Image 1: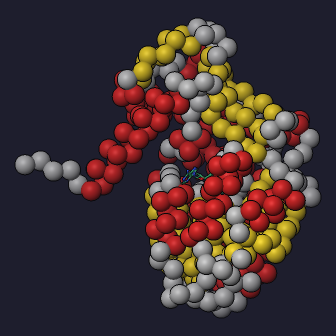
Image 2 (image 1 turned 90 degrees about the vertical axis):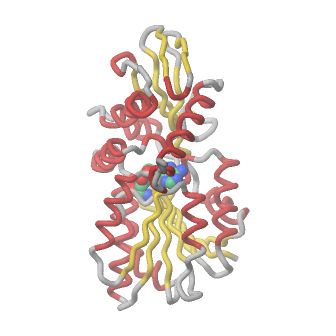
Image 3 (image 1 turned 30 degrees about the vertical axis):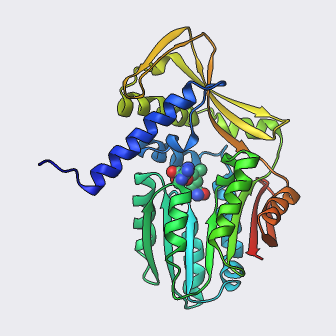
Length: 326
Ligand SMILES: C[S@@+](CC[C@H](N)C(=O)[O-])C[C@H]1O[C@@H](n2cnc3c(N)ncnc32)[C@H](O)[C@@H]1O
């Protein structure tokens, strides 16, 4: 009798969910795809390249804030400490906090949560090299990973949850509120939440950050179609799609769209789809909401957090807010 291993079952569940969500979202109006699917192995590598582009300032700005404030951030949480990073990417920012712990001769258990195998492997390697932290990786969505990690709180001590890189900005306002509620529900009074969020700035700066002259962000966006072709048996012709970034001032968000160059029929075998796209028709692939400082504090307060510190990197207009669960 042939039996699938647990990891093969998980992989086939993930593929089925991907196919179901692609079918639902490409059939919706407007047509869309979820931004979490941008991060396959190549997508995560392209995102790391984006972080190095001169036009994408978020990573350098947040790292500068962490370099400056890491000692204060870790001093505000006690021992034995458990840190959970939601959507950790490379883990490079968490290293800044780990270094502050080392300076204070402290240790921590770190739970790394990311939907991308590539990002998780990279962050596990990066954090695993440090002797004073023990690392647990979760290849999972934010919600599932948070549930697993919060249940493994170390010795009854405090939790510090990290939501960096403006990951919060990928949620629309109701979803962001629901997500902050979920985080709060996983915490106890006194636990801490650190949120990195990008602030509103001039439109030209925002547009070039999401549509760079080297075309790296365009490749990151179009790679989602390549992923659908590869994993779901799609036949998107990548040469017939363009990347477009739009600033939606009313909603205070950057939107990334893929735009059909010419009318075309696309089939996606595993999603059971055949779609006739018109010339210029779009697929909405990501939103990145931009905030003001008061709005970030209010979003936290609505979920049961008190903003204890807010820091701003003035050049790039990027913020870090340290919340306490009340
Ligand atoms: C914009 S990157 C930021 C990475 C890192 N936090 C930083 O600041 O550089 C978003 C990361 O979150 C992960 N991610 C996106 N959506 C996710 C989801 N729904 N559940 C878990 N991870 C997710 C991606 O794989 C990616 O590594």
